[in-house]
Each structure stands twice: as C-alpha cells, then as structure tokens.
Length: 178
Length: 178
Image 1 (cartoon, each protein chain N blue to C red):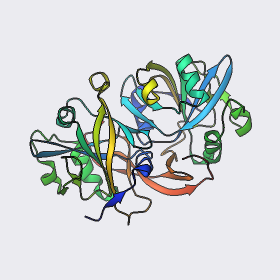
Image 2: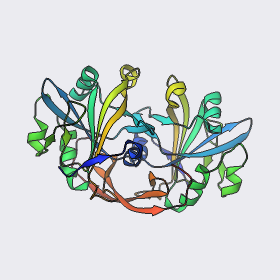
Image 3: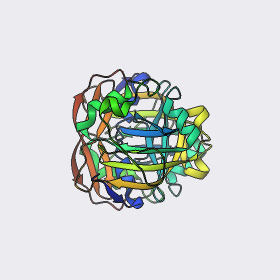
C-alpha cells in the first residue's frame, strides 16, 4: 500500500472539498462498501465528520450496530467502480470482489481501508442521536492515511444523477482562514 | 437579478459537490454575510441541509436567534470577496458594502439573497439540537433561486488555508443514483 500515515490536524483539507467517498463497514468478518456524497467536517482536531447514510442500506445497519467505518476517498480513475458500488447492495453481492477493490487491514478499526483510494480515514461513531430522524452519524477520525504522491487529488463530486464534477485546478487566495 | 425560481427537488445538485458558500443572516434590519465550507445535504425533498457555523461568529448568534438564513453559492470570479468575507467580522464591518455585494430581498425569509452568487437557497432552522455541542444547524430550504445561464458552475472548494479547488469538467457515468 502506498498510503502513509497523515496528520489528523489536516484531515479537514481532504473532506472540505466535498468528494464522493467509499465507506467501508464490517460485520462478523464480512466487509462491505458503499458510495455516498452527504458528509461534512464538523471539527478540526480531533477531526469530526458528520455523514448521512441511506437507512435502507446494509451499511447503515452495520454502522449503527458496530460504530465503526472507514471513509475512503477515490479519484476519477475509480469513477465507474464508485458508481457501481452505489448501484447495488452488499446484501447480495461482495462488492470488493465484483468491482476489484482491495481491502487492507486498518490500524484502529475492523472495517478495511480500500487500497485503490488515495486517502482513508478510520472512524468511530461518537454521536448517533440524529441517526433515527435524519440517518445522520457523527464520527471521530482515529487514524488517517494518504498517498503522499497524490497532489491536487482529482476527486469526484456528484452533480446529480449520472453527472460528476472532477476536481479542477487549485487557486491561491491570500487568507487568514485555517 | 438574473436568478429564476428553481425546483426544490433539484437543490441537492447544487450542494452535493461541496462548494464554499456565503450565508446571509439578518437581525433588526441589519444584514450580515459569512463564508463557510462545512455543510451537507441531509434530505432530498423538501431539501434539508446541515451546516456548521463557528460559534464565535455574529452569524452563529443571529441564526440561533432568528432561525433564518440564505445560503448563496458563489463562483470563482467572487473568490477574493468570499475569502474577504471569511476574514472579518460583521460586528465591526458592513461586509456587503466593503466587498461590493448586493443584497436582494428574499421571498420567504428576512435575510437577503446575494445578487452576485449564481444560486441562493432561502432556509429556516428546523433542528438546533446539536447547535450547543457541535455548532450544527439543520435547515429546510423553503425557496431556491438559480441563474439558468450558469452551466457547470465554477464553484470553489476549500483545500485548506489559502488554497481553493475550482470545479472542473463534468463527466457522465451511467448510474441509477438520484
């Protein structure tokens, strides 16, 4: 695996742009992966992320039961696999096998990292108060991994239906913001 | 104003990509505007959006007190003004005047739309349970406005500090996703 450990203080820089992510969960040794786009940073350090999962999904049930997941960030080369993961259920399919994704053992949680994604965030649920009403989970990032060779990651960003925006150029605007 | 009324059922297509937004609030006839990047869709229709505001900000206080805001989505031409709005406080500065932003009367809430932004979402707070602990507000979009001449909006997406990714090309990947 080409990913290296990444400082928790910089995790927000991965998530703020709004990329579609692949979320892995694991139950009784069986890993699953889903695609989602509804997430936000909620705090810098330790990094806290809020995330909405469709309540009908197997991943929703598993996250609720186990309290652990890995948020993996894919780039445009993986677009077809990401959409594939979003279009079927782990109840009937081993998505890792179907889409040729490689699970890699995580350091602090049971669900695996996805080797093909340039960044992976190992997370635990810290607040599920809004899970019943809004399908919303609040996660703390315990450990982050990033492939340092990837600069200005060409992440994908859902524009609805079959359309995805690919991350474009980076501009610099003098700022006092974090 | 070039913006037209926009169907609530398509609002998610504006927010899912993760753009930096300009949020307007209004108290006692005085409008204010802040920049933020921590938001997520939470439901399709009516559209529900979750958003984190720094608790030290005037906008946080005003949103908590009034329960109303407008989420305006700027494109790259406005990048310097957006960063400017993020680097000062409405307590001491009229940011509309300082940055040459034009307030436009909203249809359903008191805070104004920002004329220069290609899209504006009039919102009311529907759940502030997590405001105290996470500075997190849940908003329902009451009315949406979009400039129909803007295709593949060149929104800006924070990569941390002074770096902003500009929305790139759109690709199409056959999908059953909404």
